Length: 105
Image 1 (spheres, rainbow, N blue to C red):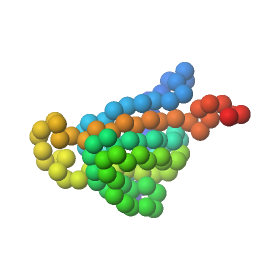
Image 2 (image 1 turned 120 degrees about the vertical axis):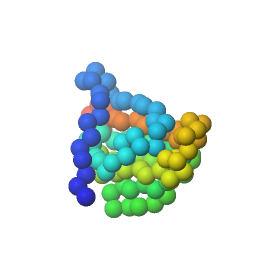
Image 3 (image 1 turned 90 degrees about the vertical axis):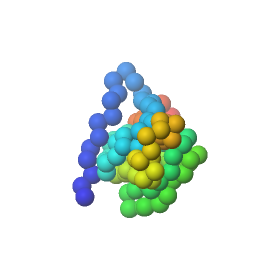
């Protein structure tokens, strides 16, 4: 499967973007982007696909994904079946460029 380029919404005046995801299907596709991605799984677990690595992720994990590296997270089925919002995953995602602090940092 070919990875899709994901456009991270960021204005030229921003050096990074932060978001909170609480739905198991947000960006639920094999994708890549030029920004680095830092992900904190406050709540949720499943399978992560990063480059050619497939492994489990769990609540409390922190993952740093490099630029242009295809990736995707598949939450366990329980997060898709339960209608209770309290059982939704809780994830923080930060996107930033490699030279966020300038070229001389």
